Length: 391
Image 1 (cartoon, one colour):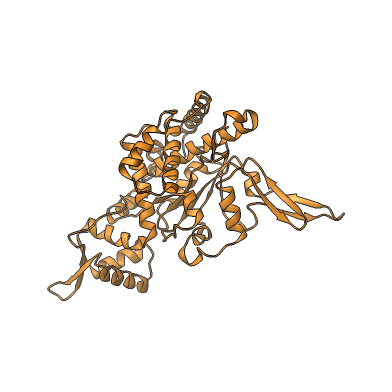
Image 2: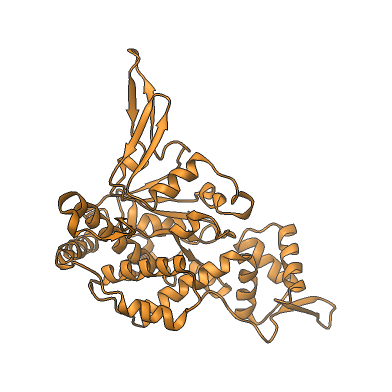
């Protein structure tokens, strides 16, 4: 997909291609496991007695205008996406979801008989679906809502992790089997309460544009290659690559996790088991995309991807807005108060009041420092000791 970014004149966002490739690989392996469970159950992969889930759902967090929609549609758009030529699964980009659309519903016909209406997880059970600016999804994982619970959350918690779900209504039940849907969600940067079960089902791709990156986006906007479609050859190459991976998986009976567990134990011995499980799933999905199974190769690229996910999850536990400010000052060194405020309000669309309070909070936490210049104007910079969370 790096080549497709270049072909279409797009900015290559760090770890975006790797994370989406891992998700595609996990999706392929998961569909293969569902198919094996139907045809030859003894050959399927299991975890704690039920079918193992290999899906990797992705949440892309970035400011408005910095590629969330573009990345999702580049891969998944029904008409133009690079994945739409593959025959192994389908893709689509959805605009809205009603809260009851996930599992479907039933109505009563004129004769008094229940009539079923399939929901998203029935109609798209083998698909990768994109949902751009799905702020309601993010809202479910924020601190103010973590102790609330709705039917929609129950549907998502079940269907994003398990292959079977049932919705009970007074008129009857709606069962869904062989759920293999993978979701890619786009949203503006926000804090996430990691206690929520949905957060443990998602990978987080966080993109924090700095002034130099903003300049690249302005230059790319004038690029002639942005006016070109994805070439048929690129779509065909992707389709052939996926077909080859699917075919090669027929020779894989098990996965050797030795290298992954050795890496995890050496580098993150205190990590909770559920986070290790998520990283293991990333390693497997990325391995499928690189077609090296049954061996998981823990090379520099794999380790960097796993570490980026760890860093991303650490950042969104707190205030990612603070990271935006410190990343900006890390790059520019020192900026006047007026220039920094204008940058945050223009590029990140923060309000003036919100920007003012963010800068005060960063100062009180000693994340940034300020001084007055010879003209009495306030200037901001970073303290000498500063650690970046996300590359």
